Length: 405
Image (cartoon, rainbow, N blue to C red; front, side):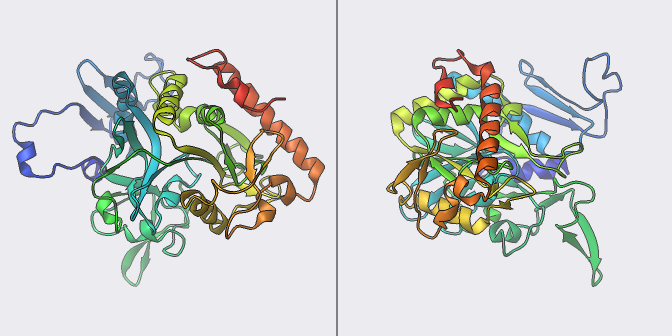
């Protein structure tokens, strides 16, 4: 199955001619059934290990059956090599307008909607997870998609649901017998909430065949804020974009991990700290350089809670978030009137087409305004504390563009 996984996920040769005299750039040996029995002496956390030798251009995967390790290790190498050539490796999804060719990037940690929101029937998907940005534009590192399947239905995520057919590979998904057939039950999370499916990019109807596009007009940072205080959408200045890119914020909620009983911030630098092989400010400098050279507007979009924290407020509806993304991509958000939010100093649109204006400013959606201000200041303090380790690092100190408390 690891071989089938990488067949789905890596870029396939266009013809058999490409395989003549083929020499691999890197070799991954997947020994998932083997473990490192001497892991304590090797100073590891468990008997699972993913080991790379860059000089020998080989990697070995031990003790984990998680398909994602096959691709994420290679992504980590891309994060090491590409900046040397002044190319920007990105943990993001990307799509392109079918008519104008205008492209957009979606950054976000697991559960923020990165895959879901980039699979837009009105636009062509370039890729859902790993891309590069060079002097010509953006391009996909991969040849497939690796989507979460939890609570998947054809109504909520039609593109992903319809991509699951012959050659798609389900992982950690419960199968139930129905009318003599085994059928996936995407709502059964008794084993894990991290059910996945890998499928080749051409399983998505209307995908973008060139797998590359020009420089992005919009760069969208997705956060699932379980504290309920980040606005559904904010237009970021260049400095704020770097601050929130380095912060890489989302939140864990009760029930997703053992011991989590209230919202817990999760900061993952550049929305992919586990895959970074250089200091986060190096990637921020690359993003800043791309924006300075090619333009593009950065946005912060909260796909999490509104009207209160997790347990009190409500999860932002997919309809609201889709309306916001549509406004960003069609240009109406850029031309909206804005007001300043206090805790983070963010610019919030007063109104957007098809979006309830009442929810656009998070304070308005809270009945208890005092509780909102207390929670907003609490989260702002968490941002400030997390960012202390980046102060004075890199070519620019982006601390000044975060909350001022």
